[in-house]
Image (cartoon, rainbow, N blue to C red; front, side):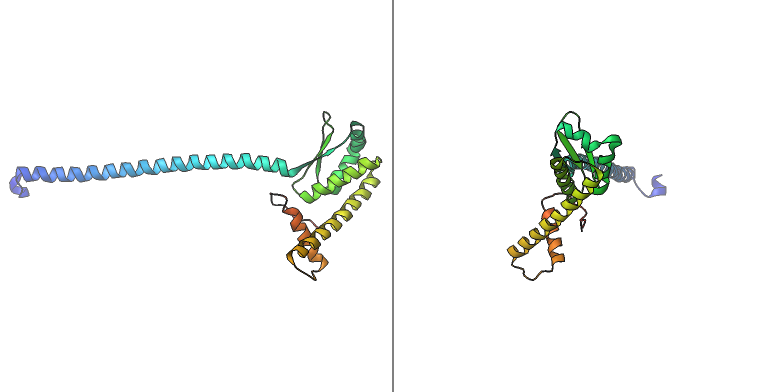
Length: 198
């Protein structure tokens, strides 16, 4: 073997050890790299889960806070608002694009809607209906129109006030409406669709 390889016994042993060492170094490096990648994947997955959990908890609170409005109502008015076969409540929900929840155990009507404009109009309309006492489809339509008209006037005034504070003059009413709407929406932390109630 020594003659064929041209190496002494000692040199051959050193050469074998060198190859074994190189192979072991490669295997150890490969193992460490794979372990590091697995650990990183595990850490990333745990971090994602923590972030998703935190976001879902926060979003749930925000959605509950910003998508519901309550109106106080006496027990004797609940039946009138619902009406036979839910006729009145259906008209209110359709005209205002909201969901109304009337709880038997409390004197509250909960308005559920992701659009703060619809919520505000629903709240105003229900307050007018309760004050008037005559809750029927014709009256509902009348008070929805009244709420829209008043809300438009409020938005225009808000736009005028905002542009005055900014030192802007000669702004067209259409732009004042949008500025008023934007100002109104800044009080809400969620993104909503702007609806023109004209």
